[in-house]
Length: 114
Length: 116
Image 1 (cartoon, chains in turn yellow, blue):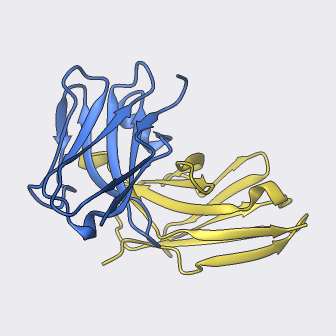
Image 2 (cartoon, rainbow over the protein chains, first blue to last red):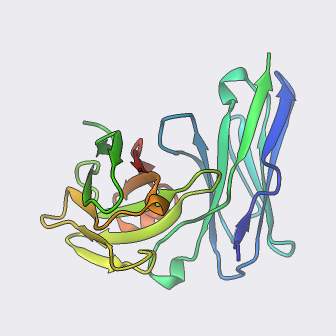
């Protein structure tokens, strides 16, 4: 049973527009959420994170929104650039569990069209 | 180097053989993690080290998989009697301290293992 779900395998967006990547989770014990970006043949690169005590975190063009009641988070990229084309993974962890393992979704492939 | 380094980048082995995958974490990082990413899936947790000890090995799929970190730095993931289903990209990550994984963990480029 997948605890972190990214239901859109792919997304295409025009350059300059907003990209919205979605993620749902089922485990209510998760208290930190992270987004990673992955280019082909490279390891995932940390992008942005949010604690469950917040509902928004912003870093430059990237903003993550968290809706705890809906167990849903989203990553907004504004404006989208061709270099943003990559696979984006949503991940979650339960800090109280003591194991510090990350649970990942399957990823969403973002294509930004020039 | 500045980042997490994994060797080899690619490994092709025959079914039934033994393989070792190596991870050099970022210098000074006490926490080290191994993940496995199968085709079309996200990374799946295998094992986590705090220093030299395996603090959580609950993700290892069976006793053919074993990992060590004898000096608290470099780690080796060992797979015995490889099976075709072991084919995947094996990712290593490190963080300064275990709780820092909640804000960021740095990943290596991975080792692509193919069992034929």
